[in-house]
Image 1 (cartoon, rainbow, N blue to C red):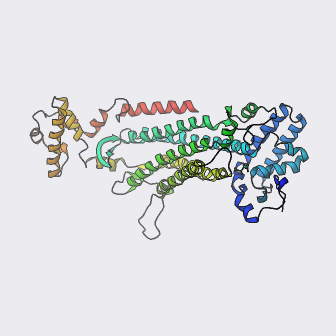
Image 2: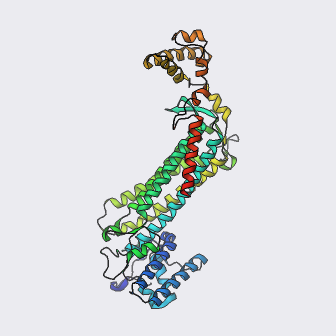
Image 3: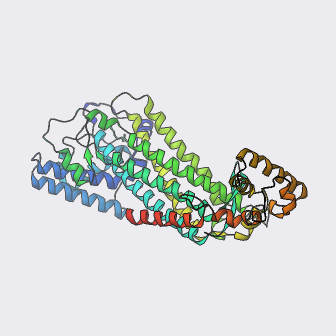
Length: 461
Ligand code: ARG
């Protein structure tokens, strides 16, 4: 039984079951790079302020580099009984550099250490999410540009409402993912705060320089209150919230693609590489990628709920409960980063079927608003125009035709204001083309949205 690094006052070893139950090494190994980065910064700072000698600081730095090299080479021996990533790394460091290894933990506690590691990790991962989101926005712009003239029924209540361009539909998602990106950048301001120097909870008597550590690891600032520093997990909660919103947006898009791939819609053909077959029904091509993405959204909400629940009853400051903060984030991170990446790849090769979308326009009287607006523009109060149009829709429905298929005489029966020019107004293309005010579905508006999104993309690179 190895003597614990904190074992000075303990006479008996922990029960094997307790050792297994309390360890975090099996999953917080994932923080090894961040742990070494943070420790190197801490050692440099200790040397700079004279708490350890410059030679000792150098020796610690080299030792930590060697530990990292061993981890990367796969020769590092992880020891479960050493509890966590921090103790594993410190133990090996001490084997390499000798007793000076024991000086690394001066003016530091695992409480501020683990928080720094986790913040560095979240920082790196949100960087990855951001890069994938930017790629996704870019793909959406490309596909929108291709489909400025492709029309489909825009829906409310999932009922045909008004014709829109596919570009406008895709750009709506581009806006969501742009906001998601921006939300991450705002969250990162609060992630990039170094807690190192808070020590266990009260700060330290050693003359340390926390700002130097923060600068060294590329963070923006240092903690303002030591007790808050070691017990704050808001940064991870915010990250999980951002991830939840990203997944919610992806899930909505997946839901639409699943509908659109159904032969009753037929708006998209799923690439073989992004669909699967059935083991019993030979004709099937299933949208499993979209379904799984919609399903995996629940895992990320679960991670957020899990961490919120974990934190709600904790008194200040650090509590061991907080060791449970990492796995939900790791799981959510795997889900979010892979989902955004796969959606970007899939959208790049997805085949849209403009003819099917065009055919769908014929059902559902999508040009009814055009007729009502036409009458209103000719001076009829909109409520009356709405009523007259409704009556025209009822007639067309009875005849099994579209509004545009009624003849002038039939239409004039609902209002004498109707003239021959109404037929141009009822055309779907015209309905879309008239909506060029900022943000509308008109082709100029969509082109403008693409220009603005691309300028934004260029600015964030
Ligand atoms: N493995 C621990 C965690 O993840 C590290 C901090 C331990 N601190 C302590 N006082 N036991 O939270």
